[in-house]
Length: 260
Image 1: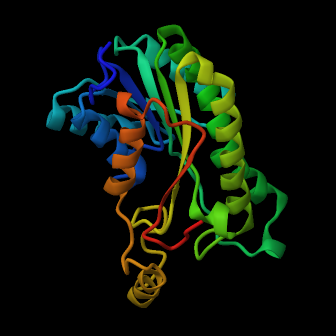
Image 2: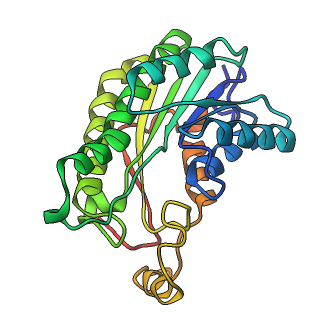
């Protein structure tokens, strides 16, 4: 194998969770994978949305794309989604991008147990369940890249749209990433976390007015919000052959909003 090639060889499939939302990081990431020649499996709670997005990406890029309904908080649903990908005729799974997420702006004393568990289940337990379902495919084929979505909220302690439950769940993802990276490194599989700052996506679309948008951008040294495409580009790069010696890392992409 040519270790300096930028394209995955032979062709592999990238699995992306939370991939249906039109302006979301998952959708943008799936498209970036496809543009690099990966086949893609788009997983989302909105199965119809995932299928529509997959059809659009396939039409634009010419790669094989599949939409699969999944509830990342439900083990049976995740196992079924993994089986659907395996039996679809797509190439072997070589990358997994855990992007499905749920933010919560609720103040600490107003967080009830149900909300706490929901935010934990989607962000942290979902990442655990989906990774556990697809890791065997990577071990079997000797190539694997897992990219988990954390947040600057985990590092700096919350933010405008994300208070304690979200911050705690995203910090948990950093611990999961580091530990799993150590465990699977000898198999040539890398596990990394991406920690975005404020990104212009649907997770908070309509949640702020123009004044708030300006205030958000002003708090970033680069004076702007990030784009879903910029996050997706980093996910895809970390999934390539050239990133094979990078593992266990937290990769900040925040316009200078948090520099550690």
